[in-house]
Structures are given as structure tokens and as C-alpha cells.
Length: 355
Image 1: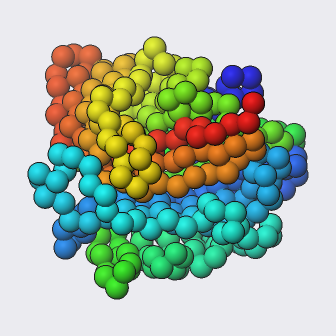
Image 2 (image 1 turned 180 degrees about the vertical axis):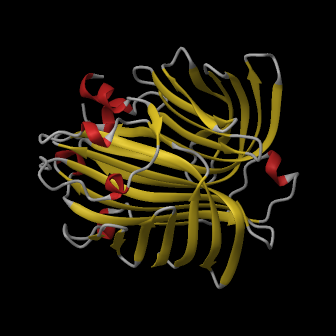
């Protein structure tokens, strides 16, 4: 995997305001992938299941093809009966931001920094960090949000620490699980969320940005999160390598895993998508072994959004699923925690690569 291996460096710890900043100044950014965003997985008070993806990206260099700032909004939502959740349904979805015609000129994105807050804004979307809270506001792609986030877990540094970034660049990044409250306005509806689940992601890659065409070959990558009242968990698996990073948020702390021999995602059912005529996974068996115990989960998708993503030398196809999960965590002392969960899964793979 060459330099791709530097992506997979795992640890856990608190979030610092400095991590939320631009982090480009004084560093080589002839190649750049600099992102900041949130995912919401919640159920509205009116009964709609929601998967909402909101991100701002700063991209530069050959991997990006075109230097750009961009904002992406993806949303799939609706009311689903228990029977409908047993199979995939082709529901309309919102997605805008990753087409080349959606790109904005470099410098369009504004990053305001002070001693007590950081604010990213682009194309109508505004993200603000003022610890211990984060806020997403503004309107993009017809989706207007007023959402407040609080941490539920420490940060899981799945891509290295910001303290280790160098003048010639480097890779750093984390996610944390959180709670979200507020409103989403879409399609003439106002969806109110109370104590929903959420993810915050922050990644910086500078100097060198690895080719996604290469490390998303074969079965690609799965980026999956499960959320229950008892515990939550996250995993990223890549078939090329193979590679895996994983964490379980339980008993007041994070159990961190690294390595395909310690955690994996297996596709167990597939669905023929009527829009694309592609056979894609829709059910997954997941396991992870930590120093605190073992996670086992079955994740079932029942609706999806998708898009293609142009990268150097080809394109990726990305699916994001609205999911539920049934998970158990078996502690090292033999006690078992069972959790009926909501889940989100992003499935990314190389669709076409020039050889």
C-alpha cells in the first residue's frame, strides 16, 4: 500500500481547538485533502429515520484533479415500517457537491479562527466549534439546518495525531461520536431531532495525498458506525492491504483496535439497485476484538444514496446507507451487553481505474 499505510494510525484522546483549525499555514500543501464535517443518524419526532452527511473540503493537487473548495450535502430519510426495514427500498435522496460542476474556486471557503472558536463556511453551510459544543447551520442543496452537537466519546484518531504533522505535511484525523439536537428543513418539512446520534470528522492530509483509486480496489472500503444507548462503535475496513481500524465506545472509554486480524466487515446479503442495475451489499456481519472484549454486530441497510467521485485516474462509486444494527459486546469477564441500534454505513470502491 506504500504511503497509504500512514493513514492507519490509531489512538484515543480529547479534542483540542487547534485540531479544528485550518492547519495549512507553514506546511507543504501542494497536495491537500482538508475536510471538516458531520453525519447525523437520528429519528425525527415525527417518525422519520434520517441519515444526513454535511462536509466542507479543501482539495489541491493531482489526486483531486481540479483544485477546489467544495461543500457536500447528502441526505436520505423517510418513514419505514418494520417490514420495510427487512429489505432495501428505492427512496429519493438529496446529494450535491461532488460533481465537478459543484466545485468552488480555491479560497472560497472561509475559516475564521480565534482563541475560543473556529468557524468553517462555504456555499451556504456554516460549521462552528466553540467547545464543548459544535454547531451546523445555513442552507445548502435545499437542506437548511440548525443543529447543535456534543461529544459522547473521546476522539478516535484513526489517521494520526495533529501534533505529529510536519512542515512537509503529513496525515492526521479523527472522528468522535456525539449527540445532536435541533432542526432540519427539507422538501417543505421541518424535522425536529432530540438526542439523535452524530459523528464529527476532521482530517488533514498535506504534502502527499494517497491515490484512492489504488486503495479502494476490490471490495473497497466500509466506513460504518453503530449507535445504541448502551454503547457505540466505529470501523473502517479496506480490502486492499487488508487494513482495519476500529473503536468501541463503552463503559466510559474507548477500546481501540487496529489490524485486519482484530476486526472485519463481511458482506452477507446483496441488492440489485433498480436505478443503477448494480448488485451492491445491503447486510453486513461485523466483529472486533478489543482489550475490553469482543463486539459482534449485524448491520442491515434499508435505503441508500449514492454518487460517483472523480479522482486521479478514474472514479469511485460511493453508497451511503440508512441502517439499523443488532450488536453485542462480550466483556473479558464474560458479561454480555446487548444493544438494538441505529447505524450508518458508507461503502466506497473504485468504479473505474485507468491502468
